[in-house]
Length: 97
Image (tube, rainbow, N blue to C red; front, side, top):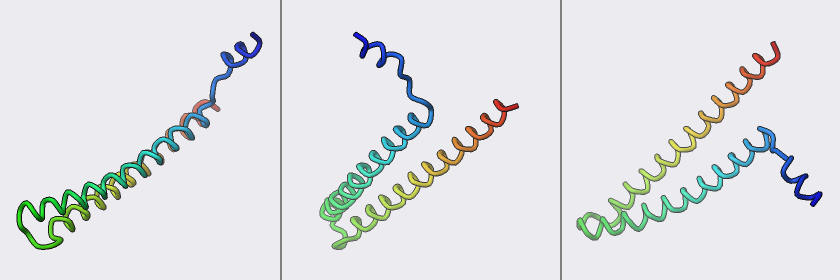
């Protein structure tokens, strides 16, 4: 009975929540990278056969698009992280006043 009361009173702080969100984001990005490249490789191969283009024409285009997509995703993630830290710092300064 005592254990139930302790578990109900525990509330994670903002830093703990932010770390869990970061972990979830990074793991999903790793999964997305693998899936993106597999789809680009096999989808490009299928397009090469279907459209009767060169050996690796469409495959190269699809892989290049996957790389661009991954770079843009990481860029947006970094920008969001920077903005959230700046906003948290501004809010902390306002709370101190």
